[in-house]
Image 1 (tube, one colour):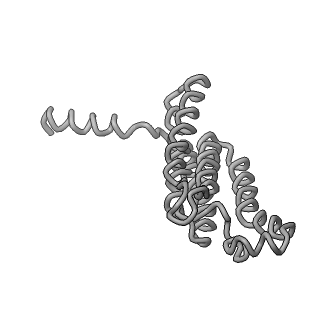
Image 2 (image 1 turned 30 degrees about the horizontal axis):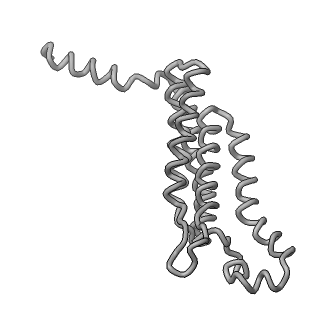
Length: 181
């Protein structure tokens, strides 16, 4: 092989050398797959209820957050640098969440919709950060708690509402979230 092709091969090997052993590739794979699965669980619940951000959105947010902390950690970033990365993720997800919040419509200009979706995306990013940092059990526990909040809290709130309050908001009668579209 001539020198030019050898240089190309060496460059390609160097470019794909960020994962150096079986342990590291297993760790990266587990963290990203767990993030995608946990995000998918929350996304499935939201999509099942007809909300704007569903399975794919939650999976991508969760896995993206995991990747954002995983790569700097693998590159040897210290805790201060990682703290700035997490701050950036939180701010970025805030912008994504803002896009899911709508204020008012032609009939009711005072109603805000999408807050629960925005908060769910924020929580999904936090779960992704936990998974990316290697805190898989924390990520799983957080997912179960968030799923409980999404699924059980509307039922609990409905139990304590008066019949008049339930009659005012049809979304609450059907198990929907009054703040969601």
